[in-house]
Length: 347
Ligand code: GCU
Image (tube, rainbow, N blue to C red; front, top):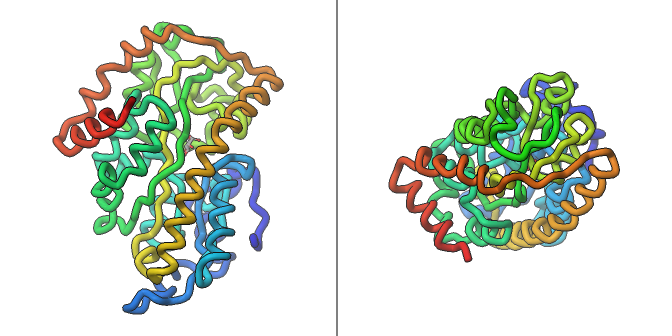
């Protein structure tokens, strides 16, 4: 399916310029609106380019690749070519490319969408979701998310379809284990590009340094940052345990990845193909959730075999430190309504 070998070393070809070159090499740029755009929405499909920042071993790649196969078998010519490892750019670039229509779909973290619309901040808060099951119930409940998922359509031509869990995120350090927020004093914690998460790093006791995912291995190795926070699957598949071998279970939030698609492209699908697309997507996120627990276990074992050490922390101290963030970052009625709906769905 791929005409080009995806590179493991994304540093060489990350970024918007490289993405443009790659798109040209793949035979076209910005052609999504040429496909199936007749008034009845009954055109033939296309192979959609999907930007992902994970490796081919990651559950997101596996579920998305299977989603593509499902589309090939059940639609009139639609399929997905998943580009892993930031080969179409880091998430901030991918977001822009989907908005332009030069990339069709992407998986982007909730933190990226927070930068386009303030309502997305709610699901990026520490402790808004109790666990993966609670999160998946909330984010795939149209009564809760209906308005949120279409809020970027007019402004950015981006439709949100739902998402994949990032699981529980904890911190990991180059310098040693942490047990309470005091242990982060004077340490730089890499966070995603989000105001909320910069504030979260401070609440955890350190200083937040925003950085793209693909730069983090080098960031930790060179000492630009002293710590990071993620799930075990990313810790292992990105090999961060090699340079930051102390994992501390802060469990500060259950992270969320959104599936986004260019709105014009989505609207160009025939009714039949759209129905199959929705079915395939539901199967994909359900498969992802199933793969997640096993991948997490494998990641813990793999990282341990590679020398990583895992420790428990003072939960109460971190919980107290994080408590004020919800109040600080929920400032509108619409955010409050989303927050209340999410909390009401908890057990
Ligand atoms: C997780 C998540 C990614 C995100 C990354 C990060 O791996 O699935 O979407 O980009 O964390 O911390 O940047």
